Length: 246
Ligand SMILES: [Zn+2]
Image 1 (cartoon, rainbow, N blue to C red):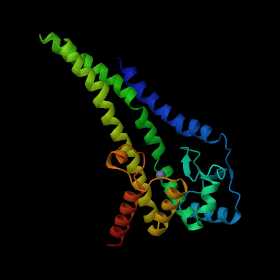
Image 2: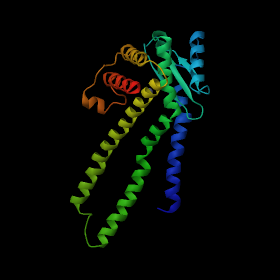
Image 3: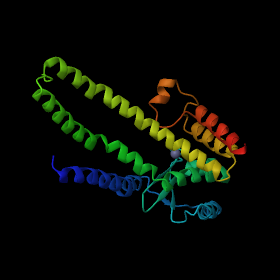
Image 4: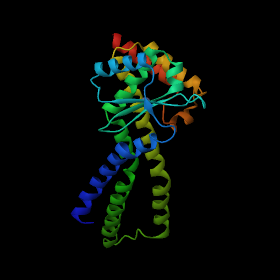
């Protein structure tokens, strides 16, 4: 692989991550149900005030219809044109203060480019894999020149098992831990912003209840989940709030 390949592959990877977060996610999120500007005037006022307090007035807020299928959620997309979406079922069921707590959580994801980092980490195995194959090939070739035969069926099988099974599982665990770390970071940011931790806990509990999600998960389920369980999240929020008081 020449020098241009070593430079262009990481640049291409960065560009793909930007394109996905800035264009593909918003395109997917703009499809049915189509998001519209916030319809509730009082809430719109509260949210605009909160965005200004957070120095995040550039973020555009949308709502989308979800009352029919009773789906309560909030999420964000974009790197330069930042957007936050709330389902109308969510806005209908949560108090103004609870909506604000979730809004600040989403602002943290956007301000810290969590989506971009997550996308980068998701596609990173492709260039890293290419480099790893190239380096492994060079190392094996160098060792064989020294008189050792690494291309025997036994070595080949061991390397194959390692590549196919162990590396992807380790990487998946790392990636899911990163997602959970971002969730904890966003919850910490809400508390640091001065929002009452009980309000955040109540908002998260309502979200779980409205979507019929389990409160706790087994250790294995939690390991392979994108978000911490509500039980652990509440525990962490309370511990963090206590550490802030000290
Ligand atoms: Zn989040």
